[in-house]
Amino acid sequence: MFYGASPELFARAKYLRFNQTPAEKLLWTYLKGNQLAGFRFKAQHPIQWFIADFYCHEAKLVVELDGAVHDNIDQQAYDDSRSYCLGELNIMVIRFRNEEVFANLEGVLTRIKQYLP
Image (cartoon, rainbow, N blue to C red):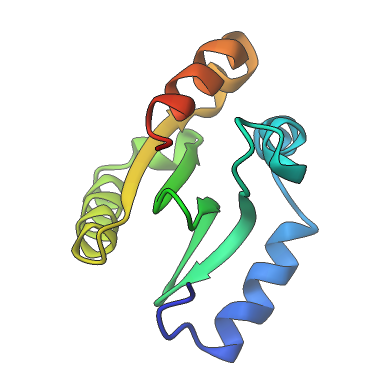
């Protein structure tokens, strides 16, 4: 489930769980406690050398929320590489803009459900 994540990554993930962005906090209220179709999601979950915003082990699904920093071309290249590495572990990555979570939360949840078995 953690795919060899280091203790340092676990510590960083714990920090991030307590310091979520507003978009992450909002989406988490709908993902936590198996609320979405009965699937368990983990917030700020370590996988290998990455920290996924949200991860569902049963579905092998990572949900990422992207703010303005992800508009940077170098960050986009990193995101693509990260998605590729996770794909090598048979983990699907789907991404949403922070703005989309605020403007169309129901659409975001519907799209996430499409990836659940």
